[in-house]
Image (tube, rainbow, N blue to C red; front, side, top):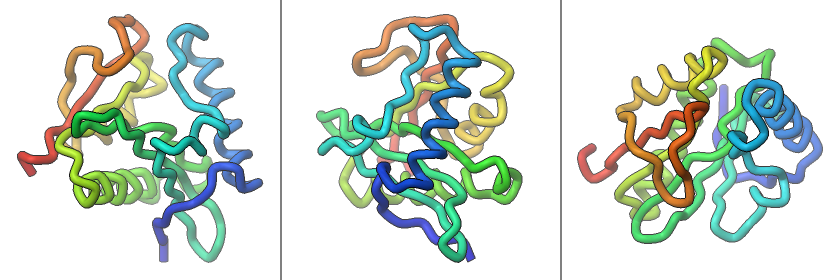
Length: 155
């Protein structure tokens, strides 16, 4: 059974997954369009970091960043290669959204890539009710980015 729980981004297996994530982001997008956080940033006080595990094996990770004013951002969603196609990302996203609701956030937003590589991620977010939106927080318009948001107060 897959379990979802708060975790530390500096654990060895998580660090490896996050390094893979960053490498893929830089291989797919121009450096100025990569907004993935490194391990140090994910350990920050405004971040709630979660992992998905099965029998102790890391399957995926994701985080919620408090943006202030009732808003949060999904960061560093990643599923381990061997765990893809098993619903890990959907389960983890569901858990992150539940956490956001529990913490009283009214809106959750995210940035993902516009390239074909990110098509599955965009479909996942759309299935969970996210809609495309203008840039938010510190972001600015970028042809390599798609911005999405979900109003939690609406469901």
